[in-house]
Amino acid sequence: MSSENEKYRIYAIKYAHHDRMSSENFIGGDPHDVPMPLDYYVWAIVGTAATYVVDMGFDAEMASQRGRTIIHSVEQGLERVGIIAAEVKEVIITHMHYDHAGNHDLFPKARFHLQDSEMAFCTGRCMCHQGIRHAFEVEDVKSMVGNVFAGRVQFHDGDSELAPGITLHRVGGHSDGLQVVRVQTERGWVVLASDASHYYANMQRQQAYPIVYNIGDMLEGFVTLRRLADSDDHIIPGHDPLVLQRYPAFDAETEQWIARVDLVPER
Image (cartoon, rainbow, N blue to C red):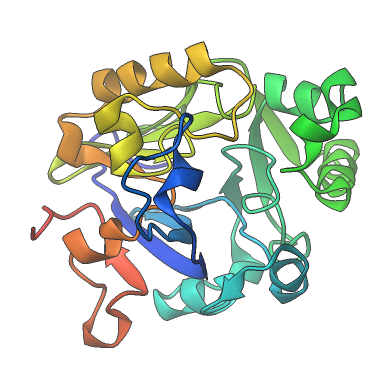
């Protein structure tokens, strides 16, 4: 178990990319409609005694199916920071959308941390509606159900402490059981927002992302992010390419691939 004074390192690891316009990223569109691409990330929280991976991404087959571009596989990114996926013991699933819950076989030794409400959501009546289920993949959901029956899922109900210095918080909105991860670092409390705010701009403009289950919960989620984090600079959005521009790279060879978001942003 980590000590109460643990200060974690956090890596934002890009694995894929999608070119799109800004009008696709806000409910109500964007009158400027300029290029505003999505980056896809997983995150690694590394302490002295334990490592936690946040989300699993998707693989090349899913990228082809969904029209996305893999830049580096999730496995490659983790290995670059010294993490062997096959040895990871703890994986936090922020929500069950395809870009966060794929790569089913990548973590054979892991226990998965998931909100009760997210498992109920992705196996319940809302999945009867194409407008809601399109962001989920049935094989991802079936795999997680298998993990439940194998005793490899630890469920969380709302707020909980995963370890000293790491807490989970259900915010919903984008998906009914979406959770964010609050992490103690040398610079204070950093919040991995995942899809509680896809971009910095969603939160700054108070303008919801179009893939949403409950708009009110998404907007309240912005309030929760600010309550949990030490400042706006301590909130890491889920898909913004600016993360890799603002934060120091892991090393000279991982510019625009892996960033240290536990460090102070450089710009």
